[in-house]
Length: 246
Image 1 (cartoon, rainbow, N blue to C red):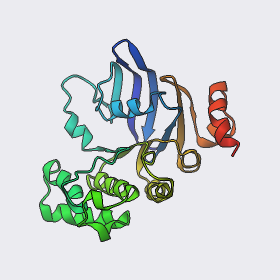
Image 2: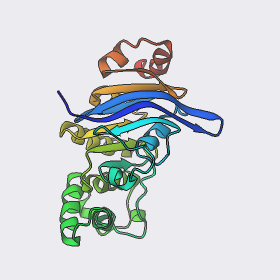
Image 3: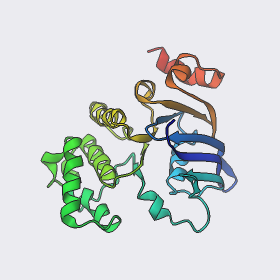
Image 4: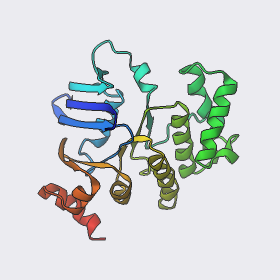
């Protein structure tokens, strides 16, 4: 039985009178790759931002090893050091080199020595194929390379869970494959991942579970073979029909 890491319970989020998420429930076990799919505007990215406490849920609980991290007074920085995030727009520090981008968080948050942080950063930059570019600034590398650096930076913090918010949607089509290849490697190594994605082949082939969202609610969830191969809801069938027709 896999260890339960995250439990999302009755999570809701409103912006003013606009309810973006409604009564969201799902769990993430160690080693799971959970893909969250759905049309633009269905609440996927807001859900991920709530899970990482970048947005404060309006209601509900986010349990990390049984502790409600959404509770008032909980120290979010402790939790975020264990739950890394890779953003759509990379969010690298443009004034720092590739290596410095992967070192700074380790020194400031994890209180590592610079030497230890550099050695750890190099290990992950090699893993994502970016070791030759350690002295480059973000403006000197491609979008796909930036995203690989962002993944290395997140891995260098030694997270228990990695959150990906549409990590390929800002990339040119020829760059998408190199980022997905890194993510496939992480999945095969047993990294626990929660991925908001439009890459249906990745969701189908790499995920252990798929969550389909529609208009702020979870419409359907299950293993990829069920969700893709035998969707139960009309909304899921309509959403997937474009992909399945290809």
